[in-house]
Picture 1: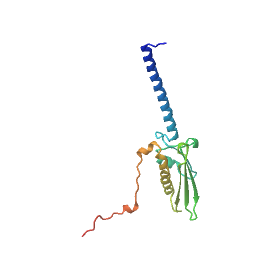
Picture 2: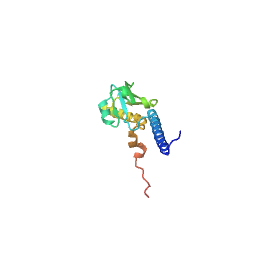
Picture 3: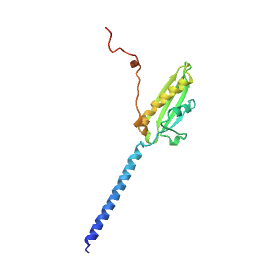
Picture 4: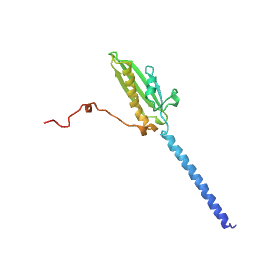
Length: 167
């Protein structure tokens, strides 16, 4: 059986198309497999906070670069905050951060304590600072990381030191 030149060219052309389609399908499958194992950096971080003694309205208002969810099942990070009274009459907060889904295994624990004379504003601002600090290790896996900037103020550098001494 002999094939015409035209049939052979058509066969090669169709073969190339089929091979191209198969290669594209394999590439798409491998890309989906890689992204399923990593946190989607285009996605905003979903956090769930479990704290009965926190001002959650203040926290939600101040930490507006994440999604605050009400269902723990859709959260990427679970934050459990427990408070107890200290021996001196102050308050101790224990913050337990747990990574969920793609962030599983990234866990942090923090404590913050307040004197008995601390105001409720001191409590909520101090807790906010620790929550933001605890979220950093999760935010670096999200789309927020592109806009993050670390700013550290060293108390020793706040004092003005003369560059030279007058003669």
